[in-house]
Image (cartoon, rainbow, N blue to C red; front, side):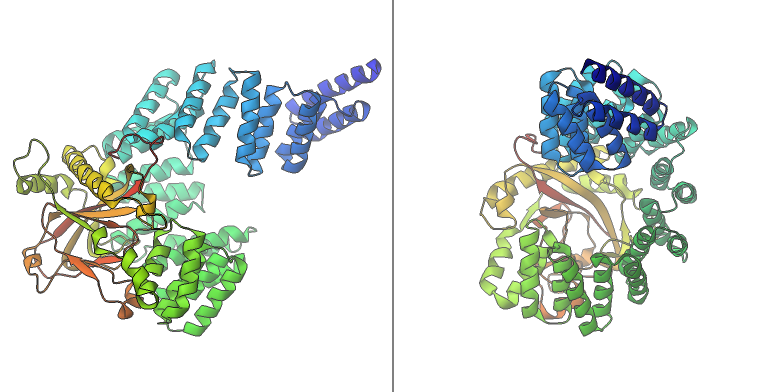
Length: 620
């Protein structure tokens, strides 16, 4: 037995040397020979398990590591490696349990703390993740850029971009000018509206050798914010040179060119999608075609969108791509063919909330309201937080179940508040005039964004409430007080899409400013990523004062124009400077057009509920 052990140990050592030199096949043979001599040798088992994991054979890797731990459970590094394997197998809870075992054996195991932080963050447990990543840093002899990046990501989720920016500044002070940290720091500066500083960070990261697609893509975003649009276009193109299928670069380049009224706005994406069809990976081409189709759909170019979705479907056979063909067909008047494709897509993925909602929407476009009840109900059951699904169901209820519709579309769920001026400002008129000047430079495009509901105007980029603009932040605090009051008044009610989620705690999510010109409007829509949505009026044309014509008024209850013939609006809010309107995110809303040489400028945002342990600070 001793001879077998000695021989097995020699084989393990030679295998490890081969593995370190990159000779995986030789290493595998050595470990397998060692296991023939000593079938349950823990070291040979775990090293062979690591090889199998690198080869992509996760099931074998899992089994080998489990066998190693059955022989010797006091191996913290093996518990850590098993956790990584379980994570790749889609079993994060089991992975966390393995990391707990590793840390019970070795409390200062920095890599296990780091992996635990990653997993906890992925599960939305940011407070616990914060403790874990801090432990990883404190126990590391030399924290890596990845440690600081993860700490910044978790801090951002808990405390916002400024706190995350401070974390990365600390990391740069410890590590030096690491290009990846400089890049991430620049991204946060961009979100905070410090565009010149962000550009300096991006340029420094690029000069230090960070020549990856994301670096050029994010630099392009900053150049766009600075109004240096031709340079932004060049940066996006450099990103695409390095990663021809970079979806965000294609998406933002197309949107940039669209807002500049460029006829070639989708040309680059079309060429990339066409070229990718000859590549050996059909799925990559299919996803580019689907992105092209999505943008064409947004541009209301339905024939072109259908052709792109059809090409994507032919390559991928994915239900979502067939659903795109179906949506286009129904709105082009090919109702029966489109509805049949919806049913076919649902056969491929019968529990998809988005496919169910899409089917319900097409039935409503076709005027078959009673038939839409079943898929709309199933969509809500499949995704109880899906605001678009609730919008469809509440609208269908107006025909099929009026009593239920009244509960979901109760006018008491709107709160209209004429805000008091922030501290230090004499009145709202003077405050709004100053605020208007502060956000004026953010409205620099030639036409409305491609992927928004605004028609005849402009909309700001990024998250407005993240910007380091004193007047915006002052308004944010006044609005926060109004939201507190609204949330307190809502109460709780199980089964209700708004009240059931009310914890009393909340945070801001998306925020932006919109500016409409004469004959401009917002088409009817919902906010799919919100819980409570709102609009604040900064400036309003004089014609909006006429309660008879209701030009430029905010209207509730009238759905997407393709299905709106069956559903008149339910209520309206008159816009006035200084007025805030709060309402459920699942409510259909839009604005009436107006005719005036004056502009209509607003700030809009969404709010999501939070749990008390995750976010004890109310105001965003």
